[in-house]
Length: 473
Ligand SMILES: [Zn+2]
Image (cartoon, rainbow, N blue to C red; front, top):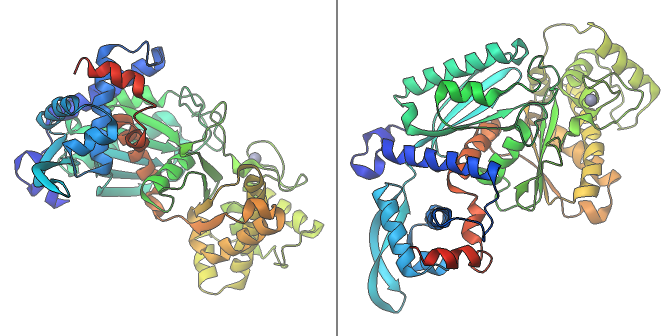
């Protein structure tokens, strides 16, 4: 991190003009996306030029260091177009030139390698949890420069909470001597279902006042950089697929097991949101139709049967005497009576239960295993329908490792078709407490430079606008 500040010369320096340019084009694309589709026929010349610019920038960002000739080859653009745009990107400090190499294995003219300048600006990723707030400062390649995390209480409502987030952001950037003119955007992962279009929360449980609250306007007014919001599980899925255990996996589910049980789905390489943005609410799949009442109003949702509160309760009262996975009326009665009354003893939380399980406490182990079995049953349904190649487990309860994963695997194996589950790996997420904030960072970087898949886009698919744009380069 200190490296970043001690570097001399243009490459290591954050140039305000460069950051402003990125932010301007992010905002312009936002407006265009919301007002008219950028179809190949209707696109104006400036848009085509910008698309080519993104194509080249992304080519170097994802595949670099790379020569101009190789960029032309990969994008299908002419060498003249590539040269002209690369000159612009060099002047904007977004690319820099490295050493020269043989242009071809057989020899011939030497060519200079182009590098993406990941230190041309900063990104901030925020994991806003119901009871914690984590901030990450990264460069444009998502490399973590600084981290801050602390307790938070989302139940205080958005007015108070967002002011706390803003104050925390101001303090965090000041501490690392970074101005807002050096930051290209902030991504925020928030718990609860989020409307796909407005990116506002829709009746999030246990978060009074947050329903349809315009978080973006409040945050952008204070920080004056673009803000990107998404559901925390979607952000976690994006984080793991960009930087963690799900890299190069096209169909996966990221399951966060904590107070709530959320699920981010990646289908064909992209976040799957469903028609209104509420896809992946795994925590509200019915496990027991006579079970305890859930915050959503239904009975026996996975979240009340296997979420942190249920597991903590079970471990502290030993309500799961039978760990065979069998369910009976006695257990249901006990869960309901435990969940209904404040009969819990001591200030135990799920981290204590996980700790106890890992230390050999059999009651804690049984409570987690029982939860895992129920999560497995819910995931069996998901496996039958989506047939993912990977399911990643994350969240405070996932720290119990095999005590949770083992029964989940068992539940999935018993309750799903072999054809669906045979190819599904069930593993721990890799990024730990940074997954959601890193997904938020990835969201900002994607908004600035486009998805990494843009580089692998065959020239033919983009043929129309590329060919048209050649004429104006
Ligand atoms: Zn529910």
